[in-house]
Length: 199
Image 1 (cartoon, rainbow, N blue to C red):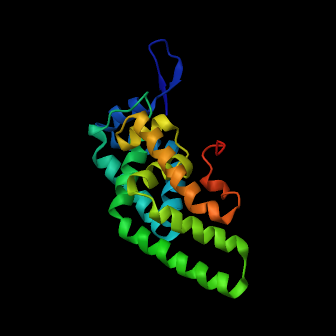
Image 2: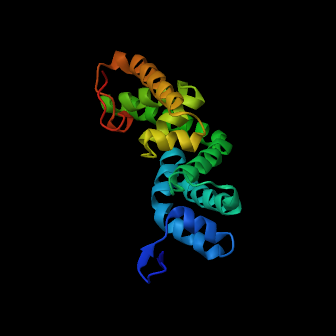
């Protein structure tokens, strides 16, 4: 949103400024939705699917709006905070996520049996591997990969030090590499971390 400074120059309000103003002008919060809504929706949908993702993404902004006066924007951006709220919403919805993965797993088993497609086998094994990750490692990994947050932003979203994020990512990669090694195939692109090599 545009604002004018004391010299009459037009400036763009930062997230932090919009957030502060939204305390007395609730409509200002809508600009934060315009800035971050698409990325946040994409992350939530990637975690829980389109059907539930639309509702949960909306729930993220409802919760964020209600808690807006408690937020402290990191580096003038509310992005890490919003993704942190999203993670809480997803955690509350964890049972549905587990059911979805289990259903997808069954469908892939049926499809593999019917079609004998080797790529389906990799997808199935990938789902198995993700389900076996500890929740903290899985959340950290998916914020980085599907949420497309930086490691600093992941740390802010989860409320942990960057070192903890790094150790969780390293542990998750090690577990996934071990689980997927028998396939002797290159892991699916969405599991590669921002272009990093496996070395």
